[in-house]
Image 1: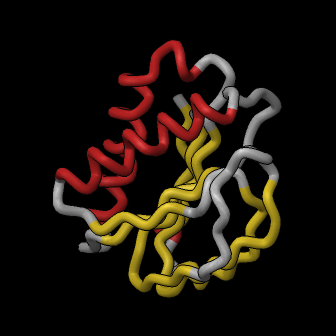
Image 2 (image 1 turned 180 degrees about the vertical axis):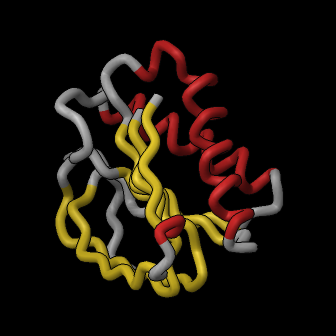
Length: 136
């Protein structure tokens, strides 16, 4: 798994077009403020260690959210950080488990629509810590 974590003042997204035929219809834009945006790339080998990857990802997200005193998180499937990818259903399941665990911990979680190319806008904070890359 690879994560690009960005602390954003503003995040806005609008579904553009489907990239996975069986994805449910999504047209509504979404927006949030003062959030950790996690661009998540689930690699081909990650489903074999699903629970471990979920825990590692959550740990990184909570750590950065704590640095900026926020409970707002965006999970954004982003299959552009490595050369291998998990199957769409496995990647979607991993992201859903991350969402559920964050919700259970008191976070507000937004998810970009899985299986879509999206138009999005980020206003990333200036400090160096607002931009973190992690891989495991």
